[in-house]
Length: 120
Length: 106
Image (tube, rainbow over all chains, first blue to last red; front, side):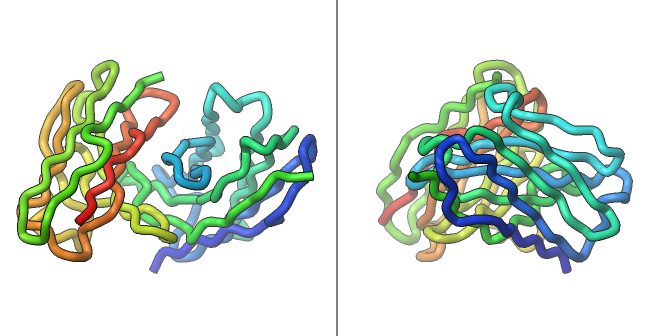
């Protein structure tokens, strides 16, 4: 079965760079049509799509955060990494990674999420 | 970006009642719209994709309709476990966007 799990720091200081890792199993990111996305949710607020990486290494970013985001994959390790630079308290949120399938092209499997707090 | 506006923000209903949730897009998204359910402390769960297709394991009381800019999620008879927040999401335009959510409360 498909599982995803996010890992990374729970607390970062303003201006620091956040690095989050999504480790997954049950699928391969070398399979045609498959993608992994990062989505965040500030406490009590709505979901916000951040970035997505396809099996062929095509990458898409939120235009509002594009200058701060980098998404990469390591197919051999079954991992996707998101870095976000210049963190600010408004970036405090639960960060999710999610699987996007090749047939059902929506986020059909999600990690449990990891809460990242930005504070000095 | 494509803004998705959900209404109402909160829907107060009782178990057994019918719930009708709306999602309106600022520009056409064809039929490329999904609905997710999120309960407190949990990740979202995909309910409906491509406007009207139920995801695997989703009960038949959940149905979706619409195309273009106007979409509806209907829960035919609310079960206690259906009280949650529901989000719509489009995949027709970049960036992918979510609505702000509708809370279905008892």
